[in-house]
Image (cartoon, rainbow, N blue to C red; front, side):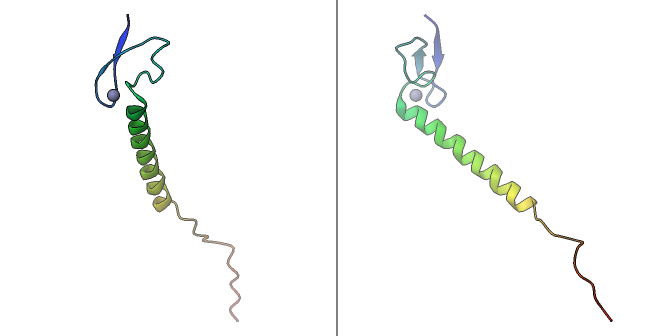
Amino acid sequence: MLTVNCPTCQTIVDWDDESQWKPFCSERCKLIDLGDWIDEKHKIVDKDDKQEYLIPDNGLPLSRD
Ligand SMILES: [Zn+2]
């Protein structure tokens, strides 16, 4: 029997068709890990938003007489 450690709580999980939450030990651990992943993704997206400003530096009509 192949076993893996639950990525969230390190519980040993049997890797077979009956382990519906593998590699997690339970739905709870899967949702916790998914939540962490989403949080991390949002942080990265926020960082990108702050770094990327669309500042047009040309195309402005300069009509000074
Ligand atoms: Zn777990």
